[in-house]
Length: 144
Image (cartoon, rainbow, N blue to C red):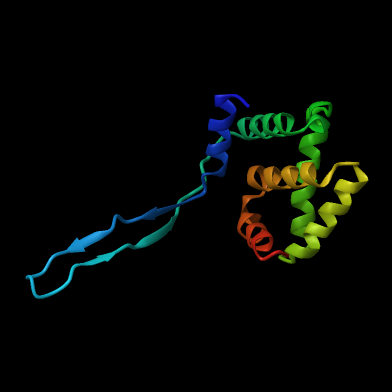
């Protein structure tokens, strides 16, 4: 994967940031102790607003760099697959587990292996329906 693709992929996934404050130390007179604390603050920023053609191009480059199965597919097929994944997730109205099962079935029907399907799903959600990213991440982290 080239540097341009990595940079563009990073821009696609930049939807929130987490900052950690540096530890602070307070020193008191010799009779007391020194305390150190650290604070983590999360802030949500607006997603990077890239032109749709750039989002599509980055999506296609990422998939093609990931697996040979994507390298032989035409642009319209891959973009249609990504959008259909987002439509499936929308159709299940927040039931991420059911949506993932539907996406897995679609992947099996297209003869994708599990790793390629998972990568395609993550890339599709990041690029075309980022509003589902948090729910998808939570499902994977919980083992759902």
